[in-house]
Image 1 (cartoon, rainbow, N blue to C red):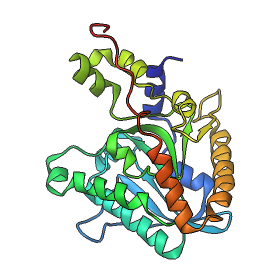
Image 2: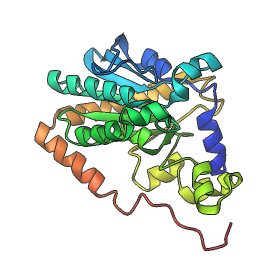
Image 3: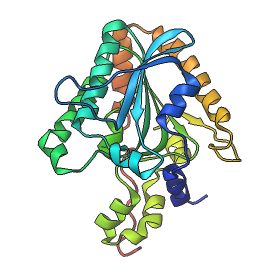
Image 4: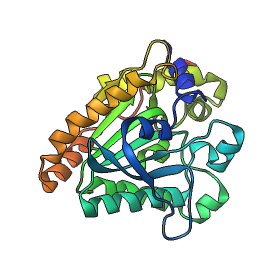
Length: 273
């Protein structure tokens, strides 16, 4: 499969959404809203749930299926209020000793004028800093498209899983092609250069687990994927919850410290495009 085929699959409107994963993997979910500062952003969906009877905090990017739903949540692109809500939930989880599970599926943070006025860059930066020292386990699952700081703002985790046809990158291949070659139509070539697919990132050690999808399509046999996610969470939580908080934070620091040098995609020879 070409890398850009994975991009298109990750963006497909019939792929499961964050609510589908929460309903399938967790029980007794109770949604929490608002950032307790400015308002509510529906592009981040989260709350408290049970996983195998254990309280957890679960949250993720929310996209709609129809135009009206997508407009309401900016096509899964959170505003500052969304990231502040996510951080509020994670800090609450730390206070009560609950693990945090996040689901990543976004083309990036919302780029609108109001988002800039309300401090989108500050909200993302604060999440990165706070998650790096959060004293409870964090597991992130990239279920579709994970792009830019908009994805990383809920993705600084002890364990990062990627679905088989998910992608994760510093920006979209269209954006990459526009910047490097001044031609967004070269996005398929950019996707190859960026090494953004799940198998590539798993082989590079950036993804900790590669979660299978049904050959028939994830939307047709969703249980294959949700069972694999649940089993992975079950295994890793057992290990992570056994670590003292200081060791957990130190291990997370070392994990990301060793990513240095792996994140930059190979640059094509001049004129190759």
